[in-house]
Image 1 (tube, rainbow, N blue to C red):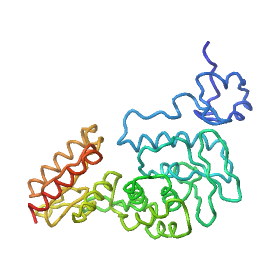
Image 2: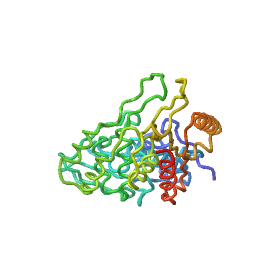
Image 3: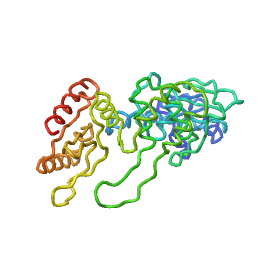
Image 4: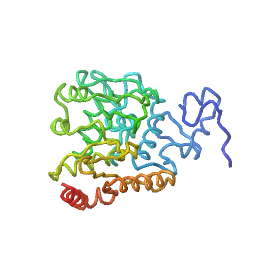
Length: 325
């Protein structure tokens, strides 16, 4: 038997209480086309946990899932609750690796008591370690960028990912080349992250303190941060980030992820979106041809190399530096 239609004003996610007030029968709320992600909330099937067909990278897909789930939980959220830890990081758009749990992280500030809800990891935060804001785009209550990064010290087991998350929070966006364009400011400043770490004892504080001096404002992605850290920890010079390249006549060639400008060595990470988007692929080909014509050596880094064979990346960069030193 086909389920009856729901009032359109309920939307794809809604509270049971709102549906009942609009005359929806309780039996309809138990129909198979509705999911029950949290008590008192219903979501039309395929709206929670559904990944878009095409994503720039794995982080985009994870963020889409978390945002859908967070919006569903927000329908039943109490005023003193807020999203924190990796859930807040996803809401802020910070790239993270796949984590051990897909549950939402929901916090309260003491003396409120942590929530006890299926599908939620509950936390009780200390007032002097916590700042809560409203996320401008989603309208969700979240820990501030600095507070969020400080809580990731308890979740991110790999130090490179903790640095990459910090890089994302303090990243200074810009339009490459000689053309000026106003871009959004960073989510946080370095001094704000530093102050959050120094505010008091918290889980993961030693890892956070070790990560602070490695943060940079010019890293555009998690993979770029990993590339830089692998190169530097191998004893090689730290490359310049987000570097604009011009030819001998002063014509702008393009912006490269990382570079040794004095040696004319460019290091470019090739993500899946480069391969899946024909226009991006063609732009990259043209840029790399122009770089080579201008005397630059381009080292292209794949995901398999970065996470599976980092020694190959190190060997290629070291050989290029030696050949041009």
